[in-house]
Image (tube, rainbow, N blue to C red; front, side, top):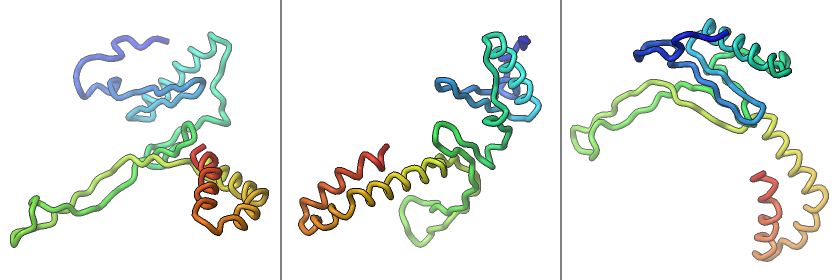
Amino acid sequence: MIIENARGSGRNNPNNKVHLIRYADDFVIIAPTKTALELRIEIAREFLQTRGLEISPTKSKITTIYEGFDFLGFNIKKVKHDYKKQEHKKQHKYYKEVETRGFHLLITPSEANIMRVKERLKVWFKQKGKKAKAKAKDGKAVIKLIEQVNPIVIG
């Protein structure tokens, strides 16, 4: 199935707001409406089927950006924010706070990744932590301890 005039012209064309983000064998399709998304999923299914591949129903889900989704070890979602900013650059007697309401994109490590790092740290401290604590009386030992733990935290 090929969509004719998929790009079209004009800023309000819904086809201009459909995006595919791909990394290796993982991909995300972002669309403004559920019907546009389902159409693109069907196109992707046909494309993969001709190559002997398929979309895994257990790993796939349709969700809104406000509920969020996990992709490549990160949770991506839009969250509402309420914050106040000052209207003037310098505070003076006419200083006034202006409310701004809206959404911003929040990208955080996924819960599964956080739990995996915590588990690795727990195992490391059970194995080597007791010896490291005993030696950590001076500053050099603490620095060495941080150097050993950093690769686990960073990944």
